[in-house]
Structures are given as structure tokens and as C-alpha cells.
Length: 325
Image (cartoon, rainbow, N blue to C red; front, side, top):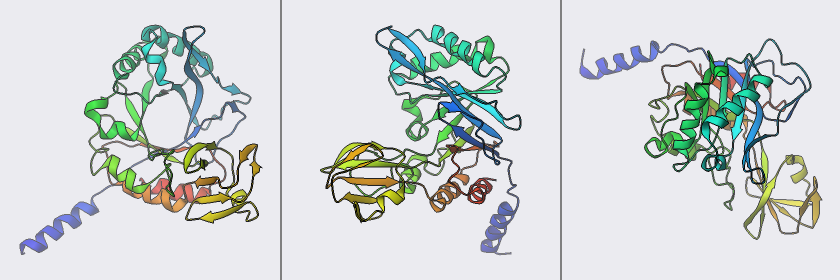
């Protein structure tokens, strides 16, 4: 057998022995009022319980946007409580006291959880305080027997030396919001394959010290520009509204120019304003899933869609889940 045939056989055998892995299907629920929403595909539901922000008047970190639970969580789905932590709190609050307060409120809202997730976009300047908070959280009685997971942004998985590795049981890599939202142009700041490849490289996920779950976007938004300058983020705008040729003309893939002064879902739009409508098609999500699935850790991940949204076809979502197996 010559060398070329031998190499081909080795590659073929290696490919054939790659075993499918088990993945867990998850969704984020990020609204303040819960009324029994779920998805037939969901095995885990990551529910934001509250935010922690800085109250200048009280001079302390306080919980806000606490979940208003109007219906019981479904028994068929594992509930993972999520706490969103504003980065500004780390310069001003005692981390032990904050850990105690966070756990006390979590115990009231979701006592039986098996996993707790903390969401914070920490920086080089705040990482030491945030990491100290994580260590304090792990030692709270409420966390006994529970996994601690933390969200990881794209820049944090690429620049591990400067950003550090959070002291948690596992991470959740947020595979979205990777572009410059405020930058003028016909690009997609939610999910962009070039940006995804630039941040994750060939091995940043595979070699990350924590096991990583992965989150993909199911949301859309509209970015308003006035004189090519960022003027705000518009939510709950449907693409059909922008296709109204009486009000808008389309330029490029995602840009819509206003033809007259008007209001759109309560937003004031002036003539000449440009709206960039950003969404993630099933095709784009599949491309991202195929790329991400190549960097496999020795771990069976949870694949989470952000967020629970009934507009996406169930078959398409299941196809994307299947890519990661």
C-alpha cells in the first residue's frame, strides 16, 4: 500500500468512527411575565428571573425586572434560572453580600433548580471582582448540589489571556450580537459568519478550559439611522411593515429608506431615515451550526435558542439541533 492510499484510509477510518453525541435542546425565556410558554422541542428552559443593577439613590445593587410568574412551569421541562448582572455593579458592591442576596431571591423564585446561570459581560477591569462574586456564589447553601454556568461572549472566548476564565462549572457561548450594531451599513450585527469565524478560529471553542453550551439567535430587530448615524434600536417591527412601498424603498439586502415622515409602532420616523432590518434565516443558522459543530469538546452540550419564539418552524429548529449531534 503506497503512502497516499494509507493516508486516505486513515482519514476514512477516523471519519467513520466519529460517534454522534447527545445534545440537550434548550430555549431562553427573556420576558418579564411568564404565562406557561414553552416549546415542544424544549428539554430545558432558561428563564431570566431578574436583573441586578446599581441604584444610585440607595447606593447599592438591587434586583429589578423580577419575573412575574402567572402560570406553573411545565413538569416536562427542566427550568434553569438566569440572573442578568449589570457590569457597573462590580466597582461598588461587596461581592459576598451580593452573592447572599442573589441566592436568597433565587431560592424564593426557583428553589428546586439543578443549574443556575449568571449572565454578565465582564471586562478586563471588572473580571477580578466578578470572579470573586462567582466564588462566593458557589459557597452559598442554596448552590449545594447545583451547577453554576456563566455566559461567555465572543470576545471572551477569543481573548482568554486578558479576559480570564470564570470559576464556574461550565459556560454558555453566546453565538450572536457579534457585529457593530451602531455602524452604518448593510450588514447583520446579530449573526455574521465572517465575524463568527474570526472570533472562534479553528480551535478556540474546542480548547476553551470550560465545557461550553452554545446559544444561537432566534430574534430580529431594526436599527434606525439618521444621516448615516445610529439613532436607536426599534423592536417589534415586522418586515412586512418595511415592505410597504408607500412608506419605504428598499436599498440593498436589509436597508429601507423612509419616503416620508411617519410613525411605526410608536417610533417617529423622518423622511430619509434608514432602517436596517436584521434577522437570522434558517439557512444562516444552519451555516453557523455546521461551523460550530466542527469544534467538538469532549462534552455533550446543551444547544439553546435565544429566545422562545413561535415564528420559527419546528422542523427547521429540529434540523439545526440535529446538526450538532
